[in-house]
Length: 130
Image (cartoon, rainbow, N blue to C red; front, side, top):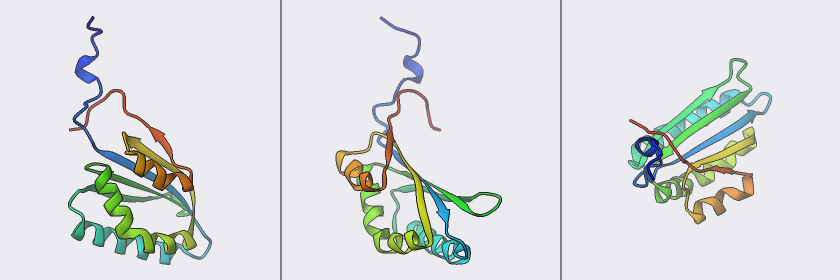
């Protein structure tokens, strides 16, 4: 029976995975944090065509930063994770990870990779992206 929500139901063809991470920047580390974020952004743009968006947002007081990432699929996120893993270790010396969210339908491997930093998985059930 049709419920009237089929037009906005989950698009099963949408394999995109989003990653949101909230960092609390350590005192005195803002400049180094921003410099590393800019390097990561430039490298990701240049070498990872399946990374669809990669954006960093600072709070007004510049003590916290959200990173918003969108990947074509779980494999693209794994590729990105492997590309940035060494520099992410440096980033974690400059800031503490406060929250991590994976959105979409991340693969079991993606879930396992992000479990050690407490990632919460939110699965899509309705909506659209243009």
